[in-house]
Length: 302
Image (cartoon, rainbow, N blue to C red; front, side, top):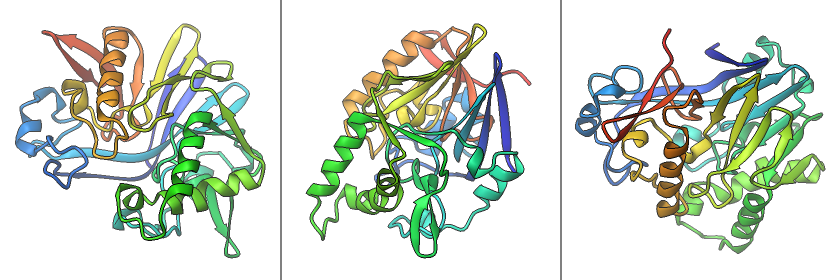
């Protein structure tokens, strides 16, 4: 079981990995087209924590378990098992995610809340699980928090999709994802639609970070004078700290996502805010620093 943990005051945040890997990026078929290995090697502070000596990026697909003194919240629920997906590396997975969660001491019934930073395929998968041929909420006693604007957007997108849609929405499994990972939560009455700046519980609140999707949010965790922010897909890899203009292929508005990153870096660079990337491999968390007019992302000292 691959877990990293960070203490923010009396709140504990733990990374629970569904899958992780290392590989080259760059090119028209990559989600970060500019991030060729030779280019990444020029951003020397990425090596070795976030990029290998060969210029290959480290990635992780994980959930963040946020434990306050009296509340258990899962932020983003990865891809999930048994789900038919267009992308081969998401299709019909069979991982030990639930067993790992249980081994960490979190039974499905012990989860109080699930929060989706947005409703893409790799952030909502374990919202549901397959039981007797039906998709049912994985965490039956939890409230499932979603930004209202995000939910409304994707509900309309699905309603407007043609049966033979072969565009980006189809590649991202928009209809399938909504059908098997979002709609069953709605049908069970477990959803809580909130504003993009909502307070979830004491010590956990949202901030709007649009661009990757219209209602995308990041999660601020604060306790005893300490603060961490879970990014969601505001950025996918620390190389975007050095190159905020590198927008992901699946961003709904690349200009807005770039503006969001730049504003975030201006606000939180050179502060003691721990930034936890939802897809960052290696140490996953770090601090934003401004060095010579550019931004860097540095892992905490061991």
